[in-house]
Length: 283
Length: 286
Image 1 (spheres, rainbow over the protein chains, first blue to last red):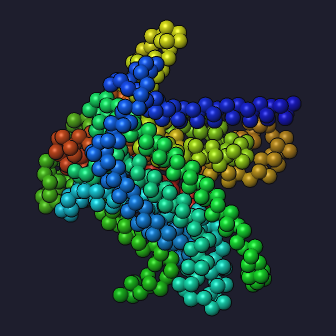
Image 2 (cartoon, helix red, strand yellow):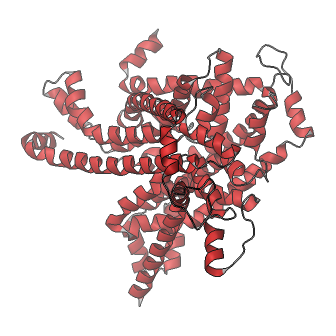
Image 3 (cartoon, each protein chain N blue to C red):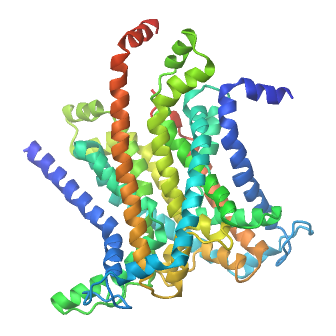
């Protein structure tokens, strides 16, 4: 009796989750459908299917410039955010130091802040400093929000890191640089990887910060917004589909790489089991 | 000088330095600039004028604070609706779905990385006349539907949609903090399902639920695209007023003053909630 009630509850939870998942992907599916018509306006059910708008969109030089601007911003943001976030995460979760608790909360503040307001505040600030707005100022704006997110993502990995490994390597005569390269970095690699994935994707899809801080340069989300407000063009669904599928591929591909990384790491200590046992004994 | 050498000597401070410098220059300084600007005379563009309260008076006399109230109301409604939608899913991710949880989590993560205006535009094409929903209803059942787009309800709908992951993931973390033995012990001692939920599961997962609600609220209060894309600006949120002041109206001091009001609400909430939590415990330090 109790069991059937329990399994009924589990089935209901499963159905609910599935329904919400459909809700989550419905607009993406709609955008995809809209990109597949050959007519100027979208009407459903679709009467004339075609890939004309895909061809036209990718032939456009403007779109290529957009993609390259978005890509440059995302790559540069990723590099900086990962380096800053790596050390930020060590300070967040690894070292015990005075002021750590306060530091943890300071790092969270930009995440718990409305992005549109942050974008405008940065616009005002760049203007006060006399910095001309371009994709470079957008990199800085993205970093203010993304570096804390990456710090947090990496900190979760750092929490599961055993500091005595570093100490043991030090005792065995490794230099500071060797410890970093041979112990700290390999163990934290999955965190570095998921951190860079987050950084890249969040920068690629960001709208509220780019809107105010790119100046005359335009990123993909900003361009799409301008087109949407101006009226319907079938290029919008095409680019929307590209960015949705792109995000999905990068994320799922990243997940697979991640599985390999953790598996490789899990099997590594097997080969060095004598060292491990020495470590355990010394604790 | 001794301050500098202590930073170099302490590995924690040394590691924290880059991000703290970034946040000082890219977060604290701009916010101070906004506060300073809000006391400048209307329609000026420098920091070197006599400070004045004129902008705050304008907000009061022109009823500009109404848009702030709208934003707060919409954000509160978003949080309440999302708490109800997300709890069963978060519960399922922790206790029911087993090894499928990772894949499901991944699926819920994907939309986070597609900019919100694209996804909202998908809803426009879904609901618009001759869009997916009205088109389907018409061909299958011959039904004519009323307009849902460009109503206040559509704005709320869009906000619930966009901010779902921000409620779901912290909530899942919170529910994962409840020890299974505790739930089983309560059941074994004769607690009903409802009692287990109310006395054990809910209180112990509260940190995650609170952080999810806070994050959702704070982001939703700054929502802008929802009202523009889905709502046809039927309701004017405060972010819209701020944007207008900064762009078309070219009245930066007024925009800054409105932003200060919003920042006040947000920072009071964030500081009040975050100070109660030990992040080490929530994020999993052993």
